[in-house]
Image 1 (cartoon, helix red, strand yellow):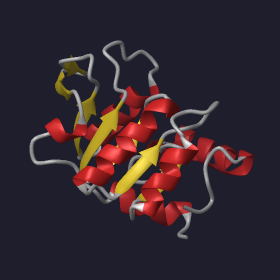
Image 2 (image 1 turned 90 degrees about the vertical axis):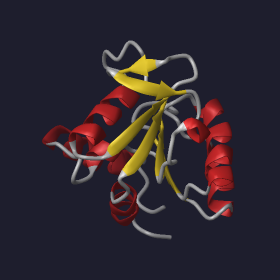
Image 3 (image 1 turned 60 degrees about the vertical axis):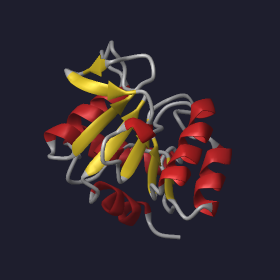
Length: 158
C-alpha cells in the first residue's frame, strides 16, 4: 500500500484525465468542479456522460472508449452503482489510475469496484477529492482534506 498523498501525486501526474458524471447543469456539482479545476490547472480533461453531447462548453463522450487517444486516469463522479462498470471499462482499456470521489455520504465509492480495480493492477483511490491535493488544491480543499482524513472519508493509504 502507498500513502494517500503518494497516490494523489501519481494520479495528478497524469495529463489526460476523464471525469465521469459531469453534468449539463453544473451548479455545485462535484464532478463539474473537478473537471473545471483539472482543466484550469493544465490537464487535458474529457467529460463522460452518456446523456450529454456537450458540458462546460466542451464535447462530452458517452464512455471512456469513445475518447480519441484514450486517457491515463479517471475520476469517477457518479453513483457507486455505476462505478463497477466504469472500473471494468478502465481494466479493459488498460487505465491504471482511478479516483472514486467522495466527501459526503457514499459518494462514488463502490467496495466491489475498488476490489476489482486493485485485483486488476490499478491504483484505486477510494474517497476524497483530487482538488484536496497540489497542484489542484485551494485552501478550502486543503482544510477539507484534513477533515476528510480525520473522519475516514478520505483514506490514509491506498
